[in-house]
Length: 237
Image (tube, rainbow, N blue to C red; front, side, top):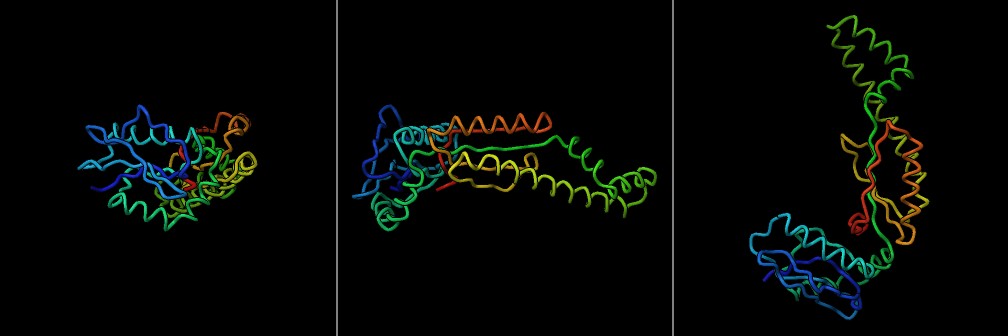
């Protein structure tokens, strides 16, 4: 039967799995497969595996329990191996890589920060700063049929938005990076110009959260900071 994989740990990692069940309906039984140096928390894979809320919660609960007792490499939902023997083979083949990554994550947590800015505020700033944007904006208001100028205006505003958002994102990262071990940027989304994860020492989490709060206060009401965590360190596995 295919083996569902929740996380990879060191072989001596505590496995306080009492009271937890794996994915599936009925819930699968959790177990560990181990080499001399590494272990993987696994279960049987239920037929017709899909990302149902019940199973996502079960997966997350296992990760949270393991992370409470030390470093664990979290696997994303849905990772399946052919069987336990193949999982053991993979653990042995990638032993050095997994051990290095576990050492990097030891004592650390992941926090994700998303930052957005009110569009109206940003457009006001661009109009105030750019003579060309003001000229094109005024011209297109007076000449509604001026399609070429409208396209030029849209392109110029888009360029200015990207320049300003990139500059602010760099500034925010520069302020917060000293409070974290590492950072990993994701592609910005339409709603958020900055989407970045930080790897933070467990005993430095309060300092990091305070740094985020102070930066949000400094930026003012035009900016929205959304901090999520602690999370399994998916971004650093």
